[in-house]
Length: 335
Image (tube, rainbow, N blue to C red):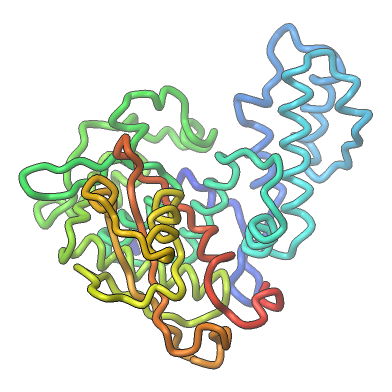
């Protein structure tokens, strides 16, 4: 079986009987090994002592007074965010439960990078055993911003950090620990190189074709359905659409900020101008396998998912919108 995304740290986690990811000391230690938390040479004794203690016992209670005693203001802020995040993880039986709770209760001060890392490792659990590189590459949109460009009639998405050359430090300390190679040139994923995805999966150096009617959006649709099933325990079917005429947009979920804005415009009966319409990357139709799961206010009306890029052609998919935006009855009971 091919493995992928070693940098997410999935091998440091356990699974419970239901297939959810269970936090281990080793997983927490990887967070405390992050460069942002490693005390610099000039760090005070309090900071160095706390860091060493947490590397030895990552579940050790940390009080506000422990952090307030640190001399450096930036260090105090980093530790407040990290300990709050750790505590949220430890409040739940699984990482999936912690993620859903974070999304439902409000992200508060949770750094976006922490949320993306949770999505990264949960998606590995969702797709464990997947042998379709196209689905795996499509899943990268859930936790890695993309830059979208039109090239020879194809709409291509490439990893933002990789093409900008700004990824000078690993997303996770595990990248360095595992000795993963630096990213190479971007290559469009296709039949000629699909077999190399697994060995390159942590380099994020393969572009994805998201042209309407092609396999990229179909693969993304399958991942969206698997994500909903795993984190919400609801069976859905997601299908990509090439166009929608006279659609009854009674319920929609924007898969990103721009998708939500476009959905709001359409819901209010406005006509999209050419520039706004051109930002739509993908339009999907979602149906529930069990109609009883659908809120009565929606009934038999279809649910649309809208994926769009920003004016600077950046695509930032927000999988949390599926947790909060779908018309599911008794959503609060699902954990």
